Structures are given as C-alpha cells and as structure tokens.
Image 1 (cartoon, one colour):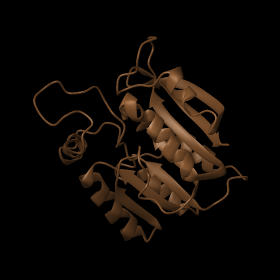
Image 2 (image 1 turned 90 degrees about the vertical axis):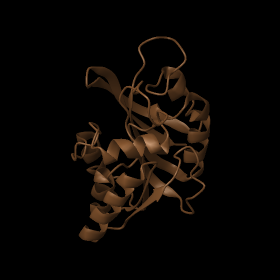
Image 3 (image 1 turned 180 degrees about the horizontal axis):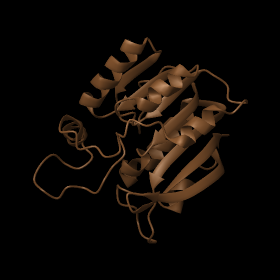
Image 4 (image 1 turned 90 degrees about the horizontal axis):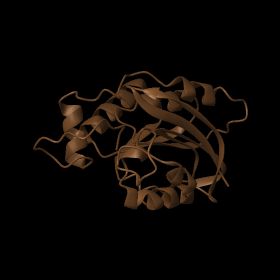
Length: 204
C-alpha cells in the first residue's frame, strides 16, 4: 500500500485494492512516487543514537526510502500491495547490491515477518488503510518492533471532526497508537494543497 490521492470515481478497480494500486504504477499515475528521499527521513538517519538492525518500509512503493535505509546500515523489508512497484523495487535493490527485500503484503497484518525491527517508516500508507483495520495495523506493528524502536509516519490529515475516510487520519487515529507507542513530535504542513503531518513515535 502506497500514498494515496483522491479516489477515482470512474469505473475500474476498487479504490485501495491491490489491483487499484498496481494499476497506478503500471500507468505511472503515482504523483507520490517522486524518487526523492524525504528530508525527514534523512534527518532521522542522521541521529547518532539510532541503532541499526531490521527496518520496515510500510507501503514501500518502488523502494526509494528502502534503498536509502539499506545504504545507511539497515537490513530492510519493504511491503506493498502493488506488484509492479515491488518488481521495480527488487530490481533496483539487486542492481545496487543492497540488503533490501520486498514482499507483497497487507501492512495491517505483518505476520509474514519473522524478525523484530528497530525502525519503521510509513510514508503515506496508514492514511489509506480502511478505518476498521487501523487497530489491526497498530497492533501488528507494535508486535514486530523492539522496545525503543522509532516509527516515522507521514499522512494526510483530516480537518473535520468526523469518522476518517480512507484518505486521511484524525487525532483519534493517532490516539490508537497509545499505549504501545509514545508520540515524540509532530510537524504539520501541506502536500498537494492538502493538510499533512509527520509524526515520530517510539515503541514503548
């Protein structure tokens, strides 16, 4: 699963389905996939106190951030629903000889993983997870991260006090991470004329 834009109301695959995501990559209709590692990720990896180990890139897309993590001492597992994106990510990692592995998987169920991570990234994936699966996402992520692990989340932010549609998150969604995670900081901004935010959380 990868960062989302507004759903397409035209006939076609169901919004958020593996087929929908794969179609976006096959047709290059993926404005979120800029090929640039976000400055927030760069700044996080510049920290002196960040241990190296397994890192998870949730909604990894074509693996841009996954490869950056791998170049900076992490063994990486990237997960996504778009097969086309994963093929590209795997090919790029192999060509560079990087320790990054990619899996077709649902980020709300990380049972496919048999390792514990010390870092997780989600750059625009959680806000596309259906509202009724967000608790599963949090529980599964918590079960696969070591205590003290950091989790960097980027998401579109809802501006109305109403149940979250699949393309934004609310304070209620951030609250779901407690008590398994502690919020360390949040930075608000704009992305494609939509409110957005970066959140850094730590596994309790």
